[in-house]
Structures are given as C-alpha cells and as structure tokens.
Length: 318
Image (cartoon, rainbow, N blue to C red):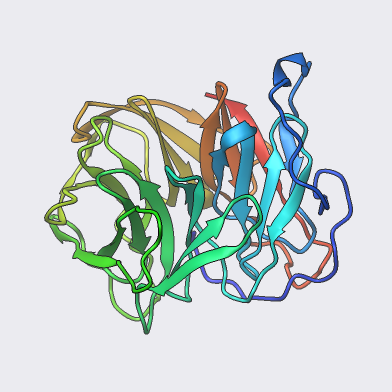
C-alpha cells in the first residue's frame, strides 16, 4: 500500500459478470481441468478498490477494498465472483487465508486486525492493534502464527492462530530493531510494507519503503539485518510473494515486479528478472497459483469518487 486514500461507501449492488455479486456460494472448480483457458484478466466490482490478494481452496482468490473494507471472492477458473462481506467502513488492505480457512485482514488506518469467515463473510473477531497514527498494512502466515506490518510504526503484530478464537486480544507487539531504519513519526513516510517468509521459514522478510531496503527479521527478537541483493530494486516495494526460493517484489509506482532467487535463510538474493506488463496499473500485491502470478491493480491515481470506477486482477507467467 503506497498512500492513504479517501474512503467512500460502496454504492449499489454489483451485477456484471466478472465483477458480479452472486447470490449463491462459489461453484466448485474441481473440474477445472476441463477449462480450456482460465481468464488472465479478472474485473473487480465497480466502486471496489482492491489492494491485497490471497488464494484459498477451490482456486478462489480473495481481495479487500481500500474504500470501505468489503471483501470480494472470485473463481480464477471462470472470473466469476461475489462480494462475500459488505464493507462496514474501515478499509481492508493485506489479507491471507490461515490454516483454519479463515481470512486474516489488515485494517489499514483503523489499526484493526480482523478475522473473517471466507465462506459467508461473517466477522469472527476484530482487535485494535494500535491507536493513534497507524497503518496495519500486510500479513503473512508462518513462524508460529500470523505477522502484520504497520507502515507508520516500527513494529510487527503477532497473532497466534488457534480455534476457537480468544475473546480478548491475543496480539503481541514486536518492535523492529537491529539494522532496521526507523520511520519518521506522523504518518507521512511509509516504513514496513510487504512481508513474507524466508525460504527456510525460520524468519520474516519485510520491505521498508522509506529506505528501499529488504530486511530479514528474527521473529523472536525483532532484530533486522539487510538482505544483500546483487541487482534489481525494491523501491516502491509493496507486496512480497515467496514461491520456493524465488521472491517476487511487487513495486507499485514502478509498474513492475522484480524477481530474486534467495538463499535459504534470506540473507542474500540474486536478481533474476523484472516483470512488466501493459496491464499493470499501480500493482500492489500478488499470489501464486498453477504457474501464474495473480497481480492486483490498486489504481491509486484513478477517480474513486466515481462509483463506476473499477479495477482488475491480472495474471502473468512466473
């Protein structure tokens, strides 16, 4: 996520295919092998500004709206989708499916961490991670739970993953230290943004937008060390996607994705290539499925005061 945007309530009911508000549950795509060609561009609903993406069972992708926090699900095999949760006001930014099939959602400037049922959109839990100036931005699952970044505060939030969910907040703050470059206070500069696991799954990778550096973070201590990269760039780094030992850095205002091959512990990386595509329109995050990278276009510079404005999820080869 690159900058704050004015929130506006989602207007009307979406009825167009590809941005459809379907009444029923998602169709099974177990027979997806019979699909000749999956769509490589999927429309999201008018008035819905997507930012994060995660892919759950049955090849269903979920994304949240920066405008009002709505959550949209779409079948990758067909492009059909529906709003599974109507927005309640606070934005939805990064999101992931946890081992119990629940959606974990970063609540942006609300400071919230939310847990949502991916099937019917019910809010299962919501906790305030931070008060005051905050932007809970992205999330990754691993290293003993879920980890959320805060772009305006040099801290990660740890959520243990259990069922049932606790009635009181289980969130733990982990201050970022070591070589981590501190973020000036006040919410004018973006620090911690995208987050992923290291290939050995023992530590975290966090991109710091303020200084354009990728860090390896010890989840026990918060100590950060810079990942040595031999080329490429992480400036404008937003979403991070790890696939095996390959890291994809989605660079929003650069309209590009830089690809690196990492060593096991994430301390070094070799630049592999830069992915560009004419369909990229301030890409923010991505997810991998079936040999493709599904990329969300947030379209930060579009006129979102117009309720007909919409965006897309596009796929490119790995």
